[in-house]
Image (cartoon, rainbow, N blue to C red; front, side, top):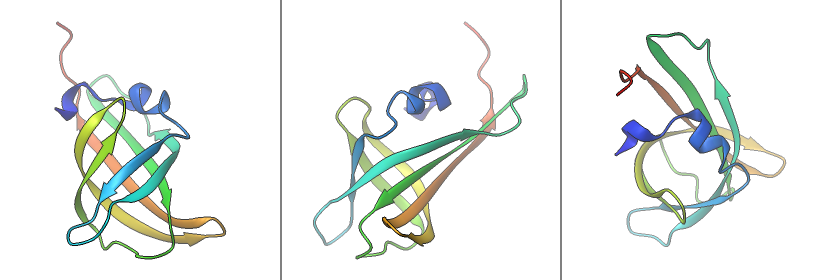
Length: 102
């Protein structure tokens, strides 16, 4: 499912809300506010996503289901980066071989 999702797809969803499904709790709204592509190459695709959510609860790193109105349900590995003045920040990193063009 994640194969078709690249940095451009996520860039189109900047400043939109995803629902983070927290086991045993209500879902948390988190906003995608940054997409960064890292040293693009022909063979390897690397980019990161930064989300911001409420300060509490702070979710530990792990795989979470996120739901988005346009992208649907995604299972992503989130890592908490710590709070800033607006909320708790989380990062998702993609590093994978590029798919050959079809």
